[in-house]
Amino acid sequence: MKKLLILTILISGLTYAQGGGGSGGMQGFNQYITSEFEDVRQEIKEVDEREMEYTERMSRGLAEDAALGADQEAIEKENQELKEEKAKIMILKSIE
Image (cartoon, rainbow, N blue to C red; front, side, top):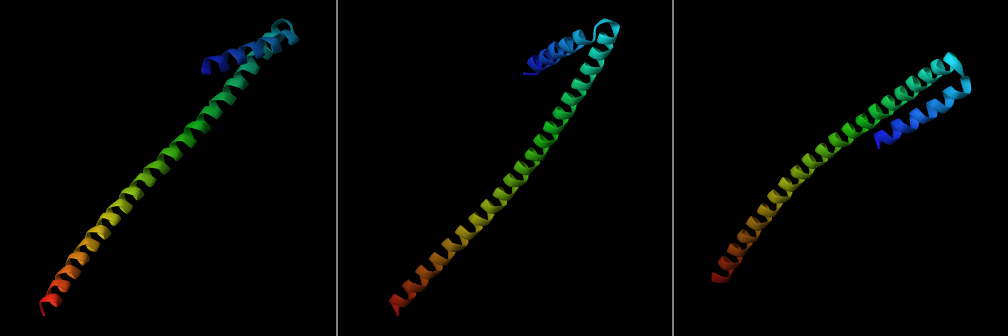
């Protein structure tokens, strides 16, 4: 993908330079290529930043899921203990 992008930029730059003609055309080509590569660098930087933000959100989400899972396990354990306690009470009531 990056190779295709670079090739496209080079072809566009050469086309742009041909319109200028002579050494001025090459100077225009160099300015154009520099500008395009700077734009690409900026876009890559922005994508990297979004990727980092996404990774951080995923990490937080996984941590929250783990905490919720632990809470769920504690609730299920407490629920089981209550059921056992209720069963004991029912047995004691049936004995009386």
